Picture (cartoon, rainbow, N blue to C red):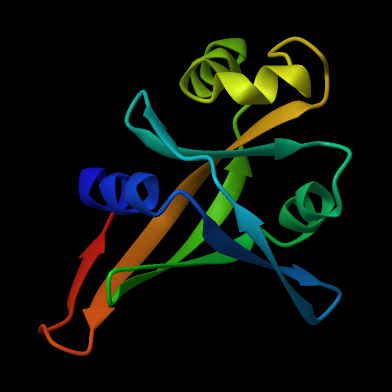
Length: 130
């Protein structure tokens, strides 16, 4: 889990894919945090991706940096925790202009049943699961 977080942090931007009634939807994301032993991402409840993850929790993340990439498959599960939302916003204070841990819109999802594949054109791939 720590290796995945380190890669996502180094990338800054990664791409999250969700299912929208059978149509894949991909968008840039930039939040990731380990909180109480769980890998979390953050969005707003008012956004379509939130609705999509509630309807179908299967997600995939893809990130690329310096000739290496990560593909993470997981299930996203809302974590209704003020402490988790606060920890996320403390890590990403620039989001406080849009979100507050108590605003009813800020939402964090714990990623579970994760399989992360690290790949490049020059190194042997490796996979971690958590």
